[in-house]
Image (cartoon, rainbow, N blue to C red):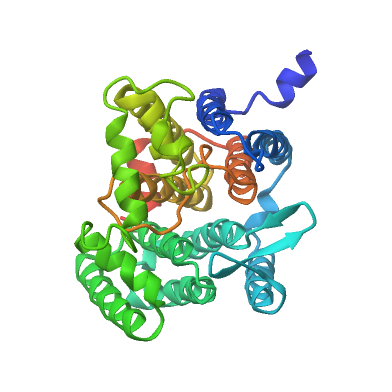
Length: 375
């Protein structure tokens, strides 16, 4: 017993236990719906596997991940797997984003997000003093763009957006200058214009247009967003109760187990339940950042910041689209939505952070600030 406790004494138990109610909330929401798809049972299996991955990664010495050759090999493999999707990937809902392996499927865009965090952590940790040089912004942007392009062409607009936010967030954390920030913004606008004209599918354009005018086509492209806002609002303060979410149970709300699980949860648990979910995510992000700041070096600090950006991007984009204030992009809620690929990667990311925590050190605020932003 004491040996086991000592082996995992470095784990941030507050962070770990904050994920459990979210996992439970997702399971309870899925259990409210019965039918041919038994999401509850399958999600329970994924949770067990993911938690096992968390403890496995937490117990390993993963400092080898900082090696340039390991990062380069991982990035090359990630790109190769994303390219392989176009050859043997399974098409689902118009996107060729999955490898179907018997009873389960894998979505490579999820590990690609974690790979980008590791790559950018390595890149910026060695060049944080020179980050003001726009050359490093362009080079890091090129790495991100390769993954962004391969994912966008599936097409998976939601995951591509997350890739962009990971890059943008980590560039900002690394200490970009204001003039370069404006340059990045201009590049972003020009890139969006190019994607709009040459890359976006018609349904993706429709989602953006529906975002600008949500009620323009509630029977067509705006149906999902419209039903989601109704579902969220119908929960009112205390919710309708577990199993009494009529919008979800009567299938007015599509994809209640993945993209719109926050809406399904809000209908049954109301505003109070939604605030509890927000509180739990706030705790998770705070603990991730706290562990990041106490990292053993720039790589660890930047990695923790990248994981926080990943979770925040997923959460706020999903909640935004569930409430009708952001376009529908197919983004899941960490720990809450159904799915094995994203859940395993989320716990793997936290497991790597806990492994780094073994070698964390307390840094004086002034010293940490200078090391972190290259002041």
